[in-house]
Picture: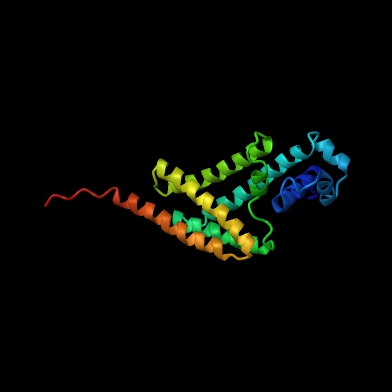
Length: 203
């Protein structure tokens, strides 16, 4: 199936933003990468570079959300599911030559302190991914409060480990975080198991 011009623009912009950030990406470069004319870019995105960036970030967020959901679904046990996420992220990062990390990190850091649509889009993406992790933990039996706090911790650790893995060009930071997160998740699972005990049968 032939990709539409608009889709090519969005995918190209998503790839460039992921690798070099919002500030480092020009609208002419996006057009060239998408094999489209500059006029086509402004036709589909009258708002210019920011409008393209928002569409690209949403595209990247959906793709990363799908990856996260698929990884979490690899195992019923939440601890094993989190480890599956770090394995998948490590493998994909290595395959990309250490360039394709989190699709919103660069743009989010560059727009900190602003009330721009880009910043809001990045926040929406992070909240959505955190929600996927939280839902997995809830299905594993954790309380809503524990699931919320632990999901925030897991996502923050994954984000930090990805950056460290990119800088060091090594999968090990993600694997190490996976091992430690699994231990943390299991400590909550133990609490769930011990919070309820079967009633004693009468002698």
